[in-house]
Length: 150
Image: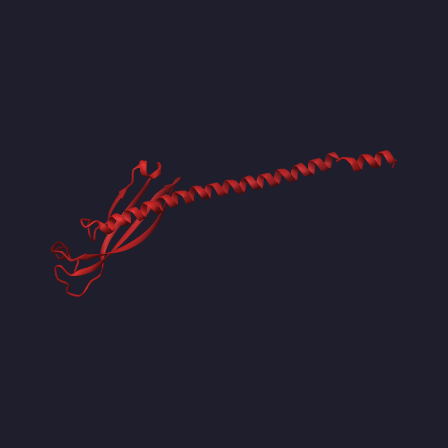
C-alpha cells in the first residue's frame, strides 16, 4: 500500500461506514419518536383524569351540602362540554345511612355515606373511578317513612 492511499483511508469514511452510521441514527431517532408518542398519549390520558378528578371533588362538595338530594336511590348527571373541554364526563351518586344509633327517633343525628362514581370517555373506552364522602344529618320524618332508620 502506498503512502498516498494510507493517508486517504485515515482522512475520510468509506461508503459502508457512512451507511452503518446512518442506519444506527435512523434506529435511534425511531426509538426516540416512539417513546415521545407514548409519553404524549400518557400525558393526554392524565389530563383527562385530572379534569375528572377536579369535577369529582366539586360534585362531592355539592353533595355534602345538598340537603334535598335523594337518599337510598341512585341518581346521576353529566357536565356540559363548556366545563369538560368537549370530553363526555358524567357522574352517578348514591347516599346511604352509614352509622346510626339503634331505634333513632326523628331529629337524631346520624352519618350518611356518599358514594360517587365519575366516568369519562377516552376514545372508545369508558374510564371510571369512585370516591366517597360522609356527612352528618338529622333523621327526618321522611327518612323514617322511607325506612332509613331500620
